[in-house]
Amino acid sequence: MMKNDIGRDASGVEPETLIPLQVTRLPAPSFPIDPNAPRTTYHIYKHKEMNMQVTRTLNFGKESHWSSAKREIKKSQQEAKKKGILIEDNKKTRKEAFYLHTPCLAFHKPPNILYSGPDESVGHPVVLIHGNGFWTTYKLQYGKALAEDGVIDPRGVVSWKHNGGEKWDLRNDDKRLKGYKVRNWRLIGETGKEYVKDVIEKRKAGIRSDPDVVDLDAVERAKADGVVYLKWQSPFSRQTRQYHFSFGGMEFYWKGTGAVKKNKWCGMFVRYNHLKLIVCIPNTAKEPEEVCLALYKSTVTGEKCGRLELFDAAILSLYEGYVEPREASKLENVYKRMGLMKRSALYRIIMATALCMIGAEKEKRKLLGMILLAVAEGGAGAAN
Image (cartoon, rainbow, N blue to C red; front, side):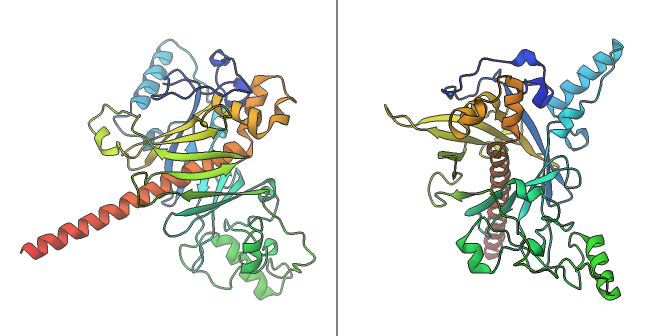
């Protein structure tokens, strides 16, 4: 197993992994990444068809039978059991998770919601992800207002009382949220079944608690603290897997990478599925310096989407040296600073953009496979 992130307070990892940090200068990038570099490893699993669970804990039921990490953990547990050592469940590690929820609302395309927590019932919403049909642009709205009571209703969408206005209002101010009314009917498969049923029954009974009956001018509607646009840069070029976004005055790029090597028999099938996150650091003396912040390793397991590794020293240095330099002076304890960074908008945007990239690349490969299959079948039919 690889070593995880720095600091027991923020992540539940032994403090022996602590390394000296340079706040004003980022670690130099290197590929392949040093296997001993401190990092946080997240495992990404499918959940209920359309959703994703991002957790630091391995789910043995969804791991491959040939998973090396799974074998190592089981081996260590068996050795500990033989020695009579009690294995405690690390609740702090389990809580350090994310959940991507895809709400379903007929004839609408509400945004996906990234929750900080193991699922939507326990966690709180941190990012709204608006996508389009061709994976060219993702609009990410983030902020503390999303977690306020009543902003996100049980359907997993923004409630109508926080609707930001008409289409032109939403275009003119991209921090405004788009709300959705509760209809008097519901199609099978839509989220929030019990909630919609309860609202309809109260309407029929004449109870005055309708969530859609509200004076929008009198209600203070929630707004996002900020907006980030993740854009597919060059769809028709050799860099087809490159996406770009800006945050805190810095330029970030998700790119395909061939630095990840898998020795297993299936490694050749996922060679072009791996991704890395690069940030460009301005340098007046020469060209901008590129620093690697994250690495995504794809898998071929049906229930697992892959593994995401976030390099903590680089992200913390970027956060304290460039994004939020004022926050760095408030805390001297490196463990508390790491925890603050992991609750920051930067960290959540990195996670949200990673899930956007993973989903987009998977859908592209699926579409390409369907096209190739159709062409092959057409060619076989013509030959006959």
